[in-house]
Structures are given as C-alpha cells and as structure tokens.
Length: 195
Image 1 (cartoon, helix red, strand yellow):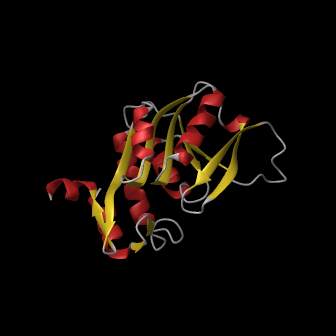
Image 2 (cartoon, rainbow, N blue to C red):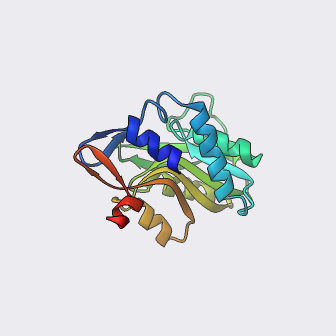
Image 3 (tube, rainbow, N blue to C red):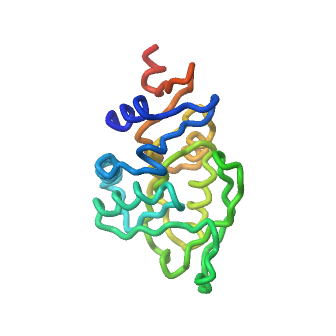
C-alpha cells in the first residue's frame, strides 16, 4: 500500500535494527484518513473470505480493525491484555508475548463476543515474531471458529512471524513489508528484490 509506505518513509523513526516508531500516525496519534484507507485495503483483500467478525488485540490494532469492520459491515472485538474487575463472565484466555514491550500478557475475550462458527479476520498493527496473531488464532480455535485471514498493517519480514504463520496455513496479508532497517532508513521487501 503505497500511501502507508510513504508515511512510514516520511514519519517513521527507526530505533536500532529491529524497532520502527510510527506513533505520529498509527499507534499513539491516529490519522483517520489513513486508517480509512487501511480499512478499505483490508476489506478489498479479504472481500471473498466470508468474514463474519474481526478480532484484534488492544490497543494499537483497534483503529485498523474498526475501519476494516466498518468496510466489511461486521462486528469487531478486541482481546484485552488486562482483566477488568467487570470481566466476571466466561472468557477465552491465552498468553501473548510482545516483542516491542518485551512482556507477556494474559489476553482474554469474553465467550459471548466470540461464538462458534464465526469466520474471523485477525487484524493487527505490527507483525514481528507472530506471537499476537498466533495467540488470537488460538482464541478463535477455542471458540470453535475459523481464522479466514490475518491482516497486518506493517510486517517486519526480516523476523520469523510472517513465515511461521504462513507455514501454519494462514492467509497473511501485510500492507507494508519491511526487509531491513539500514542506516536509520526503512527498506521495503519490494525494494530489496529490485536491488
């Protein structure tokens, strides 16, 4: 998605050799116009999947998941990383390790919001090691539903997550795939193939 790549080039900040900071438009401050374009693109890529529900994890995946749900005319639910005192109903639970934050969270979705027989599209902002997407897929499996795809805004293709998810048979669609960070700049997969 060229618009997204342009924003990454212009506003993204590379920290070290594995972290990209995009908090000015994606995961702290959110550009609603860009987010609507992201929702359009995911809806286009998964139009034939028969999606009945969108699942994401709080908090950075919510905006992209919401605009995709709007475009596909389905409901969206997010897995919580911290259990609320109000969550006293039955829930699906799994543990997910965050690469960026280097912490493990117990994530939950109330059973009443993720029933059996759903065709679930998982949406997230980043894919590094694939832990969040795999954890969400496990919640879908617990519910007796099917993951029909995984939509990722930015994939770090130099890490193993995308490969592992694809090897498990998931259809993974990433809007921007990063091959490497070099001299503080982002190199996209398509650019590294041309070089």
